[in-house]
Length: 116
Image (cartoon, rainbow, N blue to C red; front, side, top):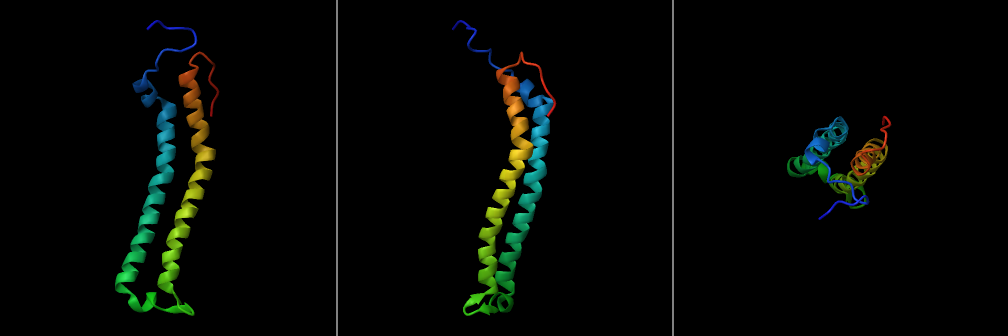
């Protein structure tokens, strides 16, 4: 199929993958994801271990039939939403601008580049 001026040639994806901007994007993503995953898994493991080995503590009533175990279980949901909100905020500030620049570089390779 002949090339037209409307469609730039397909990008060299290996070159994009090895670019400094893409490596920086991966590093920024990992800087958030890995610590947050470790934190959440440790929190969840604590909940499971307490539920299994600290029955007395987890069955401590806080108000009526509302126990420490139920509170910790509900906090699992809360922590998931908090992590999601933190990720969205982080992505909007640190990931999306760089990803947008990478996309612009791919779609418009002839345009001058500005630092991020």
